[in-house]
Image 1: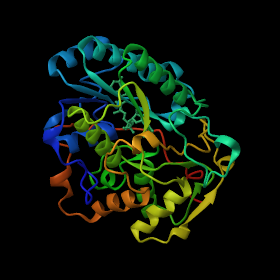
Image 2: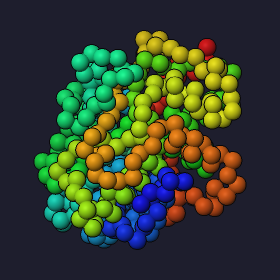
Image 3: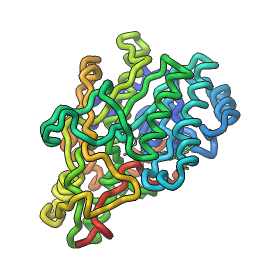
Length: 349
Ligand SMILES: NC(=O)c1ccc[n+]([C@@H]2O[C@H](COP(=O)([O-])OP(=O)(O)OC[C@H]3O[C@@H](n4cnc5c(N)ncnc54)[C@H](OP(=O)(O)O)[C@@H]3O)[C@@H](O)[C@H]2O)c1
């Protein structure tokens, strides 16, 4: 059950025994925070999904009921010149983990991305109003990162047809990352930092997506796992999309962050993708929707603006460090999430 006030999962007693890979990434950290003693979240140094022996040793040692694969090569631009490196983790690593789970009868949830989609609006409609992309819509990644993530989904199903693939999008930790000084960046955290440093900044306004607070994604997965334990739902063998509700451009998201900070949103100016070329072209439209997920009976996801506002409230919280430091997890670095901030140039115009 998700609490309406915090957006977090609260009924830990109903959870299976969970192991989350990529424990020092933003999703891994949030799992450790929300699931408490029901989850372990080893970092890459403790469990390397590119190494089948490492996987075997940790799975046998901890004996989880469920593995959530949050480990990934997420440097979207870096992957363009490091296809082998991205494939080793996003394809081979995902396959290794699925094999390890299949051999031991462990349930597996594999996390994937909106970047498996090509970026066009199906039917050529207006991106501001067109229906979001459903799991059955045609994929067609245009980046190395997207291609390796899509191949990783397929590898997981080949090894473990009962796995569940959850695609998410525009994931951020945001204010919590800033308040706890967690290394690395995500778009919202970057905007919070830039607001303090720059008079104006320019942000891409022609890419549409589904901003998603990592708190929402984590609480949805935990609620799903608790519901599966009582056999209330079954998502195995399927792809689902899990994001906050609504849609935005990066520019709109940046302005919303400024508003939450009490700063003048006019300081954020729009620009086009052409004005801000990147090594990896971002999809122009990757808004996700999932009618089947909405019918599962889980706590409905809220609009991204609601989640953002709730997340931003931690910035003034005195007790944050004591309450929310990530339990048993180390404080290693998390780098280059797959939506690294598309501000214009150095962020200033
Ligand atoms: N961030 C987004 O906007 C976004 C959007 C859509 C989907 N997703 C997906 O959501 C999932 C979680 O992403 P995230 O934002 O939490 O990413 P993240 O913060 O970059 O974390 C990924 C973690 O995986 C670890 N890792 C890399 N290679 C590994 C290996 N061989 N074995 C074990 N761990 C390894 C990384 O460790 P190192 O730092 O040591 O490399 C890092 O801690 C990923 O599947 C990603 O593709 C993310």
